[in-house]
Length: 216
Image 1 (tube, rainbow, N blue to C red):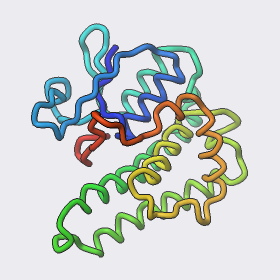
Image 2 (cartoon, helix red, strand yellow):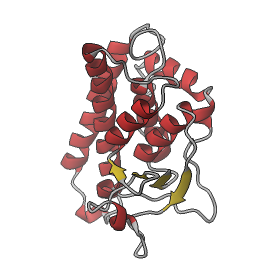
Image 3 (cartoon, helix red, strand yellow):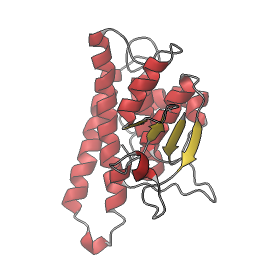
Image 4 (cartoon, rainbow, N blue to C red):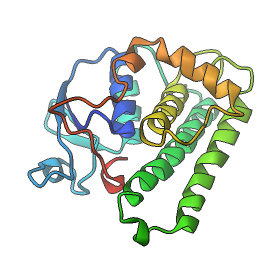
């Protein structure tokens, strides 16, 4: 099994954490769609990462699809409940966190434009999405230890990746202020080896850039 991704993409990080929690061995192939020599489009016609290449040569793409597959592929550490209603609650968390990520990545890419080509109104709309997502996640989490039920799940992975992306890519956005429940969750997640090993960092010799259309 091979994972085609980049180290700093939060969507790729989500898949890497799932793989670690499920104890599934894989080969990590670093390839950014923004690289002119990228081969990503050969495995995903949409030209997006992450892409999971299965042992039989088949491919899966979109982090949500890959996470679903991996959780069903191994009985170790189930991350998505089997009960349909409970499953929907976890997937709702994932959709909310991924939506927060989408807005964050859009901001990162947009602000690479010359300042004269940027719209303050557009940026405010994206930040509004992030702030509303944070408020919702914090309110629903409340005083609970984990996002769903009494155990670690895909919901926590998705939220943790969203918060990590905000720290890494938009450090001036103070998500901790007014969201103590998320602060506590982030601290718990940071203690897990799967999160510690995938924390995005600037690594010499490895391109960590990603663009909005390339990571989902």
